[in-house]
Length: 591
Image (cartoon, rainbow, N blue to C red; front, side, top):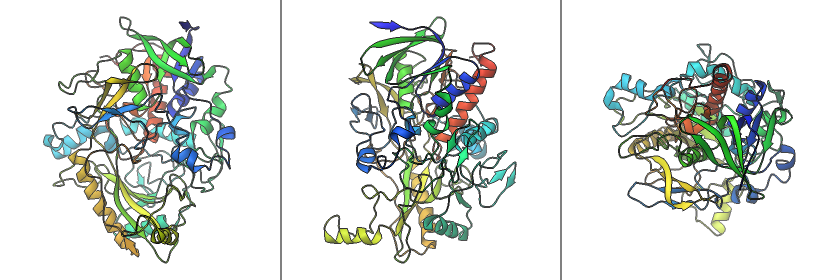
């Protein structure tokens, strides 16, 4: 039996970055908001304090902060001709669960997309001709521009206290920052993090080759900081426990630190944890979502929560599953190309580069932060001439280490035995004397990379699993080969004692080793309802009171981490809801 509850103004599904931001903006606008989080409550004081948080077995190996694959997972196949099998253990990517979501265990790398990233199809077609984009590559423009999002990027960076160095301040290029970034109205709220041996060595080598390195923009605060909401962050202590961990010093921005301290006490907001949303209840005739049904995972009881406004702020797979299972929108068909729900699933191509070893220098990887290093964008986006290269897009190249945790992070030179006395001696010798120089590439959408409902496997609530049909393409391999060679040229200029051969991923996508938690697509945005799930304001074309947040709305994946862009889009959508939708509820764009 389902218990029907009293209607509220708005219900928000998921209490990660976007759910927390939308809840805060809507309560400030006067709405009564219920936030539904399927996992437990997590607070920095109770869950992220030392010494307990520095438990590598618990958090890295046993996945304490990640979604439980026994409850819900995804199935994977590389091609439509194959049978998908469920992922029984997360490896390649690590979706979060609990209050804060993946925003509590992320590294803190916070980017603004390049201007070209928002107009990929129109830009490459206009510059290189209509044949520049392969026929089966389904990239499309976002429907919103960098210039429109700039003030919302600024707002998110101030919320998080981002540490960095501007490279394009109101059109003026500034050496030492990213000169390829779009113009920004303000510098970062905090100065960059300190540099270590890896960062400074890479900077010198890249500059000697005529490139333009800059410090990684980081949500790890270089100084104590109070954001515009009144929430205070501590100063980064370079402990090396960022990715997969909550922050012991409250220095890493997260929903738990940056938004929830002011949201939770608001009488207009109610948080319900352990509330696993099962379905959106859809009135097809009225084109509205009337309520959401959720299960209390502690008791197994089901509840129906009616609401005037529904916000999906869950992870990529969860947003897409709820749309498909609830029958909202047209499921994507890769054979005909019709439909949009599940379309344009993308991931990220990482690991192209080299490892360097220095016998007479110490890199001290244990003194680190998640977003801690030096980057260059000279080969990202369309910052370089693609004529004759055989691919479009690019990637950024970086150097540094985010941690020196001994179970997870060790490197030894090529030829070292894999066990025994010599292996132990090599570990002891080189542990503090190495780092990576590596490229991270774009991943563009293809017709046959998509998400749909698995016909065989179900989750703990009896719903079909999300089935991922995905593999890397030739465009990815060519970018990887290009970035690995450029990384090797920079590494050679550092004059290391030992340098590995350039490497890049080749062959089928492998879901076992970690790559990045940068999944995108499935509920993509645009200006044409026949090729997108939500409009430019992230409003569903098929339900005017439903808005979808997060990286599931990205039509393709840039080389950058998605958190900065999804934060900016959350503020962009919140502004449209408060200043347009609430004044005249209904479609904000006509189909």
